[in-house]
Image (cartoon, rainbow, N blue to C red; front, side, top):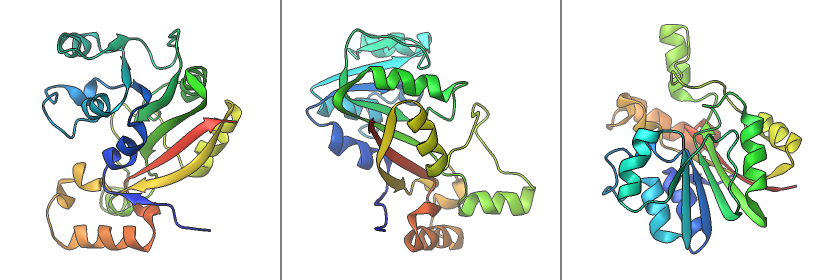
Length: 214
């Protein structure tokens, strides 16, 4: 079996796919606060490349200033939204681990995909170097306070199968340096992390999946 590709950032995974397509970006506000002029801001970068971009978020306070700047962002819950249109690409960047009902999110995604459309989903990897370090030194693995679950590629494959989708391909994203100050600078921990990711990308911080209708 061939090794899945490894990217340095979520943008490197997502942006080449969305060019000239209609895109629905789920949960796009939180990471955009104050970042509208930052070229690495994912929703802004998608908007610049896609033929059409619609965002969805339930953060009304966050939507207002972005809407004023010209971004088409609708206020809705990713677990039960309904738009009267379908998209070539649905981006679900690091949201499925935040919700109460991941299956409901997948149902909504499927309804809003064209027949040949795809969903680009990312979520944290369950086990990697820094989580092992945390476990050794603290006895537990840290998770974002709003996370509700963890996924492996196998668990995700079963979940999407139950909701009429299938995993077309997997990739890994080596972006741990963005979340762990210890890895943000060069040193032994970062070298170990990089070496493990080169041995196999499953040791990366994040994995991505391209989903299609089954």
